[in-house]
Image 1 (cartoon, one colour):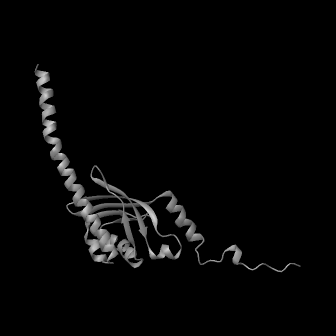
Image 2: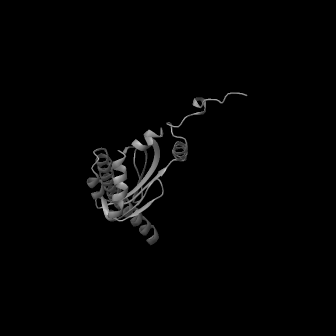
Image 3: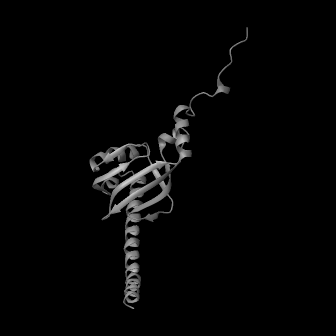
Length: 170
C-alpha cells in the first residue's frame, strides 16, 4: 500500500510540475524567437551594432564556412561581413530542442548573387539565455554547399564553352 501511495504522489507531483516546466520552456522559446527575429531584422536594416548587441559577451559562433568566433569582439568581424554583403535571412519555423532552437533558413547575399548562387539553404541552431545569443551555428545543406562550391569555380561571368570561338581547321 505504501508503494502505491508513493507512486501516486510521484504521478500527482509530475502532473503538477510538468505544466510549469512547459511554461518555462515556452517562455524560453518565445524569448529566443524574439531575439533571433531581432537579429534578422537588424541584418536587413544593416545595423551591425544592433546585431552585435544581441550576442552575449562570451558567445560562440560557428559560421557556415566553418569559421569559429568566440567572444563578441570577434563576432564583430562575422557581423561586418554579413552587413557588407547585404545578407538577409528568411527563417522557417523554429523548434525547441532542450535549451537550443533549431530551424532552416534561406540566406541571401550580394556576393553569392553575383556568382549566381543566392539564396542558399542553411540549417541553424542557437541557444538564447537572458535575452542574449550564447551560441549560434549555421551549416549549409549538402545541396547548397555543392551549389556554392560550383559557383566559386565557375561564376556566371566566365565564358561558357559555347561562347569560346573555335580555331580554324587546317
